[in-house]
Amino acid sequence: MEKLKIAIIDDSQQMKKNIEEHYLNSDKYDLVLESGDGATAVESIKNSGADVVLLDLVLPNRDGLAVLGEIMELPNPPKVIIETALVGDTFIHKAMQLGASDYVVKPYDLNLMDSKIVQATSNHDTYQENIQDKVDKLVENYAHKPIRNRNLDERISNIFITVGIPAHIKGYQFLREAIKMAVESPDIVNSITKKLYPSIAEKFDTSPSKVERAIRHAIEVAWNRGKIENINNVFGLQVYGTNEKPTNGEFIALVADKMIIEGC
Image (cartoon, rainbow, N blue to C red; front, side, top):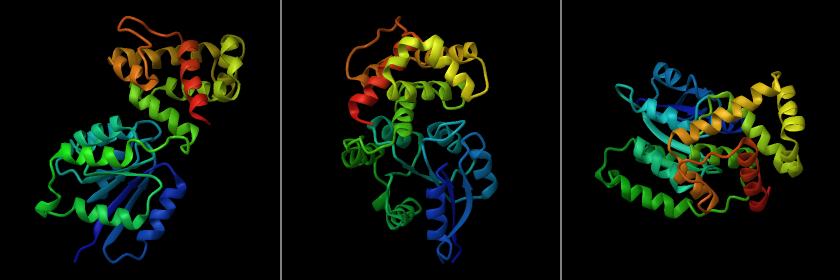
């Protein structure tokens, strides 16, 4: 019996190491690809001939949902199982609608993943559920898990994906760094020009003015994508209307406050 070819797209070195060790001597599975770059993931998957892709949603350069959409456009797309720390029902719905076969929340037992792979590659009618039925079951299992145990980077990425800020634009990294700084030192939002922008510029070897423009662009991208409802849902109230856009400082402070309230 020919082994199933497995690809893992995840920028966690520990996760890739765990999966590599698990499948190293398997008589059922062959690990053909380990990658953590969202920008090159689809081409790498196509070249690997993978039957099943284990895909994280939080990736550098391009988020996992964008990668999933591109995978599904391949002539003979592999089965894709999302494996991520993001548990919001928005992500589950979107992933399943885009064509994911299943959704597993980290941390998970790799024996569980084995069973998910078997189900995803099975032709038995018992697994051919209605997509909405799958979504409902997954949401029931995952969507209300507490978020306090997730690290700050994952929680910020959760919000960025929800509101429509793509990972490949420069403002994504600058904005993430700004929010982390505001969580650590909330008063820095009162010195955004004198302290926050220069600090980020120094870290990324650029200028404060480029940091300011890139963050502004990232926020505008979210608004131009019409994600206002998602943005308001994230914060649990009607923060902004259709024609309203927050300043950089307002958005940074709003997200940082949410992180602080939820517990870092």
